[in-house]
Amino acid sequence: MNKYMKIAINEARKGIRSGHGGPFGAVVVKDGVIVGKGHNRVVLNNDPTCHGEISAIRDACKKLKNFDLKGADIYTTGAPCPMCLGAILWANINMIYYGCSIKENDLIGFRDEIFYKNLSISTKKMSDRLKQVDHDECLKLFEEYMAITNKIKY
Image (cartoon, rainbow, N blue to C red):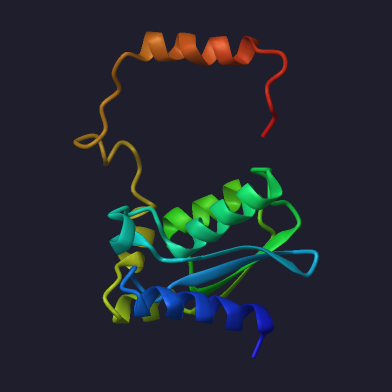
């Protein structure tokens, strides 16, 4: 068994045995060192965004004092949902190693496959749920941000 996946499994097991949430644990590894660990804490925190991967990314960023995890890999017990995949990509993580598939996540009561199918929905088809408001004021905010010369580049 892969040593990093073993730690991710143990992290997930700790979470489910404590009633924190689903069986999802993750570790972030950079240069052969675990820099972040996390497990699903959705139930514990009443927070639908507190997935194992998100928890591990937050832990790694806090420890490294950097939001950019370029050069790191993540090991996760289940294939990432769309939200976690987005977070992994935003964090610049290189490789994603996962245990169970999206279909297997669904078999135990999660609905990741539905969300992946709906990602192809265009904003036009979502018009009943999307409404643009205060565009001019928000555009001014964006222009203000663009004028900052010492901002951090993403």
